[in-house]
Image (cartoon, rainbow, N blue to C red; front, top):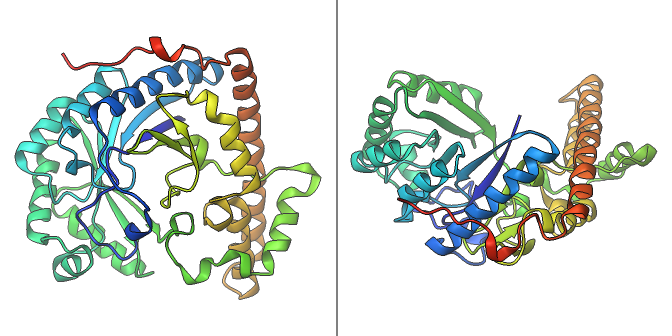
Length: 348
């Protein structure tokens, strides 16, 4: 198992996907070098914590809510991540993934790239407002150049709710040498994107879901804030990557360590304020949605019970891990290293 630190090197994007609530983001920008260096230093610092507490592997992703290749320093950032000893990944829509950029990223040591492209031809251009032929050529060329160096993964959003379409998209890219795929349904980005069947607080099933996940004193806990730690382009810690509206700031990487913001983050997850109460990743909301599906005959009681047990077991596992992390934090109130001596990683 591994944990990922997601460093948002920009939340600006050159695409216009309708299943991405870009306009819900209150402010946009590009991460500068000083902020990135401090964020990476915090990742180096937190790696010591993770090693001491759990022994899990810590990786770094250059993604966030935007298109990383809009940041002119992306290649040097990849190089810094690799020099710091991390596995490095990033996401991209590939429209800016030119041949020169591809060579530079591969030379810098990029390990994985997640390529978001859920349609082809005219439909792609209608949804993304980007030129398909150019994007397709960029992806195909990168796959050829990356062999043995970097793993490209095609990300497919099932925004049509059509599995045949997803299979057709996979087939299209397999013909062009791509081998790795990941697909998922539309998610509501912490409530920033309106999805008709995800208006959780309106549903009576939520009362039942809350009871079933808290009976016996269990505290429902989402894994996203702990498995995918998030630093915004502005250098602030945020609850997780679902907080597109940037409602849950935990303080700056210039002032606090990951360890020091843990209790504040936990309080937000437990209270479900201000983000979790509307997010489709929240355990109570997940079970609410499944109970609604049961009542409409779309799933079986056995499937609901499987999800219920999984959510309870997952919450207990997270609770145990956080207990160890918080006790470690009590022994290291400064987050291990004083802020003025955190080692910054520089490019040689």
